[in-house]
Length: 141
Image (cartoon, rainbow, N blue to C red):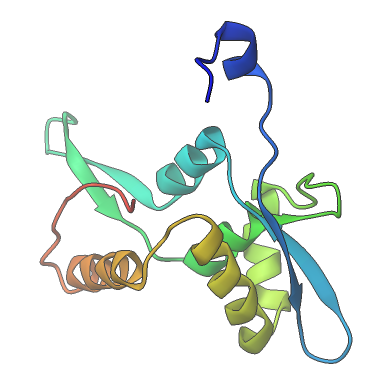
């Protein structure tokens, strides 16, 4: 073990990558996110809440395209470079089968330490918000 210096800390780390086989003989690579990408993902599932005066009072969780957002931020080429971008969320979600998407999400969740409980909390909070019983809370970890 060694104490890391500034140069070592700022050098891009190699991120874990896994091959995910889809229906047929197709496959994609999925990788762990960087801290920045994880922040983008968490920000994409939050919506600021403001009171009648327009003042910030918290966040609501937004589950729309949850799976697609996670997939887009983890699908990469064989070198680990992302091949999709945030503008691809809606189209990707409409284009891929749920069977293939779930295979990608399962691996992406594992690589990025997103537990089933995290996903359950997101959906529960989002359903409460749709029923008019909105709860704010911390982002998915």
